[in-house]
Image: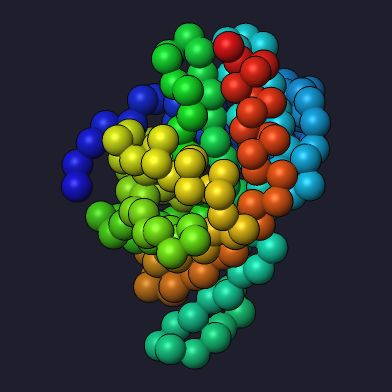
Length: 179
């Protein structure tokens, strides 16, 4: 599937990943609130709100066997960017370069979604197709956890489980702050 990712939206997600993973840059963003397993952040210039969570469980497999791998930060984000008309854009940061042209699979409460990479924007990120954004967020509001399965550029499969405790409150707070 081919589609273009808004560079502003991608930049917000990348900034979120970098800031949370690097304390030196934390001055650029403000964490507004933490709601169970999700945190709400705001950047004022330009106005961007997002929520973010880390996985509660991660497994890596190669050749059907569990393996130990080194990964960078692993995060799931929902971005709200009023200046670009973005009411909620999901993105996944894998913590490694994703296999190009291979969809990342996500499951929430039995409902399946696909996220897509765009190495020209960032090799470690995957986004939903814009038409799926609202449907995925609605499923996440109802679900208990979300499972994201990706394949690295080296062929290792990773399975990350994200708790959805606090998701609804966090996404509502981000929407409120970025009206």
